[in-house]
Length: 564
Image: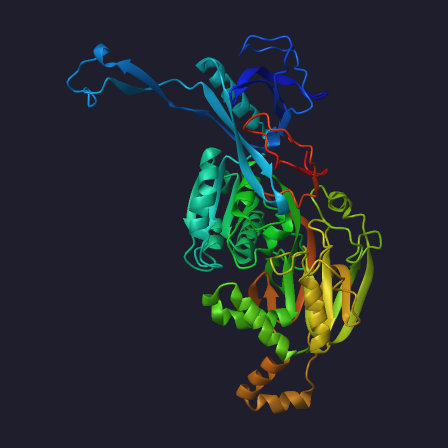
């Protein structure tokens, strides 16, 4: 059963669901196979260095996808005749027999591993192995735990967890306690839990926290909460290096990975990096130590650094929608739909000038229909070739825009299954710059409809321009002197005039009021506890005939390439 180069660590014969199996632990896999009739038998529980010869239906679980292993303890029922024990203290002394429950030594252990389900959802699956004695049982558990502790797997042992009780539908505390905490406990991961009390709380903690004591930082909340952790970790790293973020300064990558347990309104970052906003799926990615590096944008108002962004920065329609929705946070995610409908009917465009530096012609482009999946070759090559890549120079577009937006990931969500930029890559060092020029409501509705489905090309419209860029800027036209003199006579009318001619920015779900911005994309600046969206294939023959409690006819989803 062991593959070439996959050394055997331990093996023996164990029972699964009262059926004998040959079980083998290698450096990369845990494998079990139903014992074949007529095959030379081996004494149960006797280890051997010789490999088993597996059947076609044997089960292979990569150690990378083993969530946990634990001893199973049970009570032994001892049935005793009444005549053998006549103590007056026996509560059932009048019964012909009584049952005495006695604790016994463990003779079984369970292995919990990843089960893939439709739509990129992961579940925890369990198989229990029964042994003839306690020693062999403990040996198996020790061997598997030792294999899981291999530094190569990069599994976290201690996490700093921030729970945001105010985001989305205010369900983060319940999501963590019911869905996430039991899994972390099962995997024996230590946690320090902090429930945030105000905006910026997590960022304040990260400024002084002893980050050497943890292997990662996790947020239970939405995209805004994740962005707060991102900014806190990068700012901490820059501060420790004695540097200040400027337009020309390259930010320093944090040492820790960030995990996201989705409990927000849109959860676009989770959708874009795992394919689903399921708390259990995200928790499993964290436990098994998955890792993927993603791009980050730095945002400036002139020479002043404002913040880092990880998903979307948008002006016009998307900024107005967010600003309007802030007044209705009590409505939860529905506030975005209502605000979006209002701003759609308003159909307001804004004057602006967009300048951008195109990515190299050797890079991918936002219309190439190449999606970013786990093990993406484009992202893998980008990190090592950033310095070698040039650009196509600066370009400028002026006019009235219904929306100006840049994406560093596809920004998938429930209402946009492929995202507003479906072919944006997580780690290629570029952003997709979307310009929606002034158009009618019907035309804009066509674009929005295409974004909400998996059919059609939302960019194939005459008022849409899409570019893959490394750096870009936005500015609004300045008023002439006479207009300025007139406006300065009344501060009230001046503010009203600016409000009617300028929008705000939607930065990862947070409002940014500065208008003239400059944005740079930094390749793979931070790492997440994820592996990217897996490309799945259906394998109907996978475990089509269940031989044990670990085999399931529904276990037919396997990943294509991607993570080993």
